[in-house]
Length: 152
Image (cartoon, rainbow, N blue to C red; front, side, top):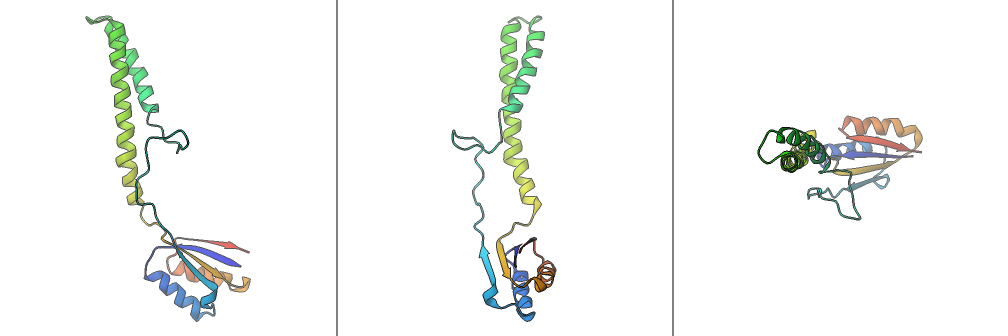
């Protein structure tokens, strides 16, 4: 059986390794694989061959439509008329929606990712017999594993 777990790079991983060795798991049955984390930000503008599902245009299109209707309605009473004020409303609404989405994905989402906290830095794999599976998993949880999985 193999038990996979995710850890931060800390002394808790070292303590888990020494605790597993004390309980009869050899060094040759343990593997620690450090992860390379993404250091650069995600790109907000998609290319033809890559899309991540984030659209900066949807809020702009909705606000552009709403502002166009309001601009055209108010434009009947203003000097330039409903067509020009509808186009001005469309432009202002689209720009406002685009800037709202840009701010949201650049600032708010980034802050949430930073506040969410711990990122796994190391994947730790332990090969053991099925009888020791519960003990190994308990030791890993005791030493602050971020998550575990079993494969039989």
